[in-house]
Length: 388
Image (cartoon, rainbow, N blue to C red; front, side, top):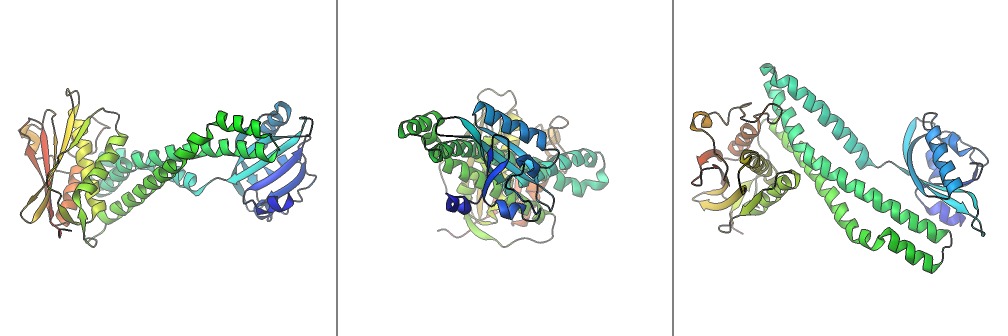
């Protein structure tokens, strides 16, 4: 058993009913090496920071007295400062089923959660700054960056957090099952526990949650790169890419994040290859689709249509909605920075101006056309790439 303890990467601690440490393993020595902790025989709560001790003590008492499982997040004193740990605490039973202590498994809070917290804090700060910048036209340039980050990061951050939250739930259930295995539960009990915890379902969902979190994190990375590029001079290297695939990916991101029930239609037809940066074009498409959804309002049977075609040397995308359209009196101003018809707090007026800049840097353009159905139509022209 000691060799098993040493091979585990998590922090492992075994305590008696008096909450005194009887055995340690895993990465315990690595985490607490700087603290010079002499663990065996000491009270386990002393490993926590003073602020975390009451919560840690209460969780241990609940497990030992009620023979129940629990999870708690605390900060421990490593000797080099406080470090967050997520603890899974399970009861420790003797041969007669009597509670004789607890087994604690501690995992350092992951980089993804810390990254999310930092991004969320940045998002709040940027939203707050945006309000000041809109009132101060002298900071319009910085306002573009702030508004872009605040608008674009919200959906992928939420997507990443939702998937990591699901992964946490799966991990807790599997830990409960593994604890039962290690405690010597019978095969019949293990089969029942597996059924009660729905582990077979979680196994199927595990890969999907991992891929979802990865996709969201990559989207955050791409957005940061996009905004960095927008604030710099020059353009990045262009490549040939599938405009239809890029459009679908961007539109799907928007639809996932909207609460408005709307039908998105991809018209079958040409399958143009465009030349440029697909990540930057995705940003244009996301802005156009989001604006179309916002414009639908109370429209009956709301619909956004995306149509691709080849027009001479251009790969063309049209984004059309069946909403009320844009009045001719303001149609000439919609690409101006900070111009918006949305209510205060709902729009910054920067999406179309940023999208226009990206299109022009690609050697193309973005223009408004009145839809034959009475709604709005935005046409994106991009240089045509080589057919594959």
